[in-house]
Image 1 (spheres, protein in one colour):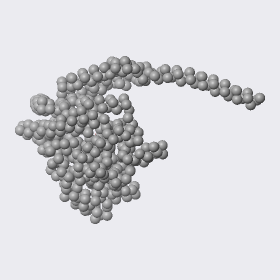
Image 2 (tube, helix red, strand yellow; image 1 turned 180 degrees about the vertical axis):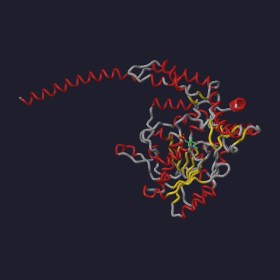
Image 3 (cartoon, helix red, strand yellow; image 1 turned 30 degrees about the horizontal axis):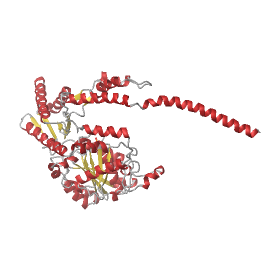
Image 4 (spheres, protein in one colour; image 1 turned 90 degrees about the vertical axis):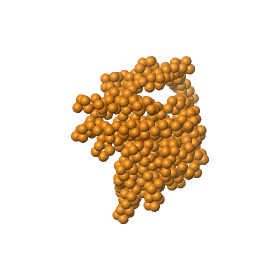
Length: 503
Ligand SMILES: *Cc1c(COP(=O)(O)O)cnc(C)c1O
């Protein structure tokens, strides 16, 4: 009796709890369903967004390449706190326009020629659109074989371009050149089984023109405590291979263990290309891992000039490339390639037990086997769609055009006795300075750079070569054409003359 009563109680309670629970869930569902809008609402937003981006692209020709940071309007982003309520799209696009689009560098402008610009080729955005709507999980082959295969196919295409053997090469589409070099450097560390206790006896060789990203990668990989040799350079700022070999010999004599040499296919400062063939000879002789940072220059392999300059690139062990630079993709697309997967084991494939299903499908390598990322942005479609929609020919032409535009600019300034030029460009970066009064020449060239930036029609930025301040022009955007270089020359000369008059 008592027992039956208890059971009855329990059933009643369950029933009552369930009713209540269901009501609560239903009420929440009604609210949470606002996350899923119907087709009518979606197309309303789409139209607004497309309208905004179309306007942006149609006016890009005549708009600035740089908007000086405006503190006033910028604070709006902080003021407009995230709240419980929805905001109208028009208001948000307005906010985006003033606070994002018209602040700082215009990454999509063909007159952005500072640092290493990116491109933002349009079909990539459409690839991202599909990617984000369908939301492929491209971390493991098991989950999205097509997405992973698309990335692997692009990696194979890049491996072919570099000259790595298909049978052994692997790679990863990552966020950029920094993570790509990190992957290369971690691979070197693991191929040589460098352990914490012997890091201080290990030696790494690179030049002082190598990118800051390499320092970061050494730091993250724990290798910053290795012996790091900054190898001397020739007058064109390329690694001096005699100095490299001499340094290696000295280190071996001192009982140290050289294991890694890092070279650059187009330094960021001047576009200098290290002599890969000779470095590869040395790497082979002393059994070093040879990593190339080709973040800026890699895709010039699509041109005859690049193929000649990069002779020996295929003899490296790993390489970092940046499709968001010389393949003109939007920011967030880098690529790491490793020549021989058997040398690295599976350093980053540390698989969790909940991924058993993923482990059972081993026929194709997955991004997580090579990269520290697990859930990752599927970067394949933003890369594949432009290549397929447009074909490779216009990419090749654009890269050759960039090389010639840099030469054109270099010739122009060489013919003007008011300018001193840095090394003759091997790729598409030109360094120069205006020959102001020797006592103030660095300061005045910085001033000149500021004046050009204040004008904003073109964006250039400077750098030190030794103790001399140079302004740099990096011709990298697919939107940079002859008239943009002419405009840069015109602005440069008139701002310099204004400065001269004022000083
Ligand atoms: C841009 C660049 C990097 C850094 O790459 P991110 O894509 O910015 O991470 C590294 N090395 C060189 C030579 C570069 O030009």
